[in-house]
Amino acid sequence: MTLPYKFAALSVAILLATSALAQTVPAGPNSSAGGPWEFGLTLDGYLVPNQDGYASPTFAADHGWLHFEARYNYEDLRTGSLWAGYNFSAGKKLAFNLTPMIGGVFGRTNGVAPGCEASLTYKKVELSVSNEYVFNTGSKSSNFYYAWPQLTYSPVDWLRIGLVAQRTKAYHTSLDTQRGFFAGISHKKLDFTTYVFNAGWTTPTVVLEAAFKF
Image (cartoon, rainbow, N blue to C red; front, side, top):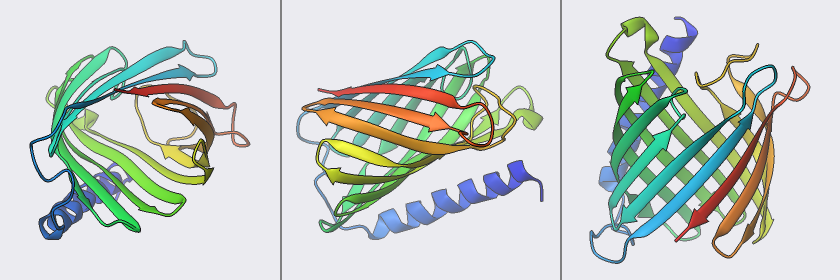
């Protein structure tokens, strides 16, 4: 089985497992469509060696269990996507959050993409993943699995450090899967994070991220 199909199988397995788990998750704070809207804007600036840098903005809106997202330069350069999903949450000491989603991709890449965002948090440690599989409507051979798994440790409330990986087609290096580390700080509703990919393997790619919740 080739690598893309292994990733595809993994994506389907994650989606099926999380969907099944979600049916057993007890009602949490996101189980109602009531309550105020919550918004988030994230801007990632990519500094890729020997390539033009680019920015990737993501806007998210949540209203109880409803989740919406709009992305640009995420699945591919000069490509946008619109998403709708369903929020689930459970647990306090061991907190589990899950958002299965479906999205439409348009631009240089066109297609339909099932995906999910999930996290598992225990005290100061969080394991999270954002992934999707893009079914390209123009060419089946261009189908692509994207993933961003991340392990975060927060020694204090305002500091985050950890390990990260990424599989993307928006930029290319000699490594099929980017891997690295990150450090971030928070102040009220603002987060600033620096990601460094591939240090020690090849010329590093740096991602500078700013996020604002309102």
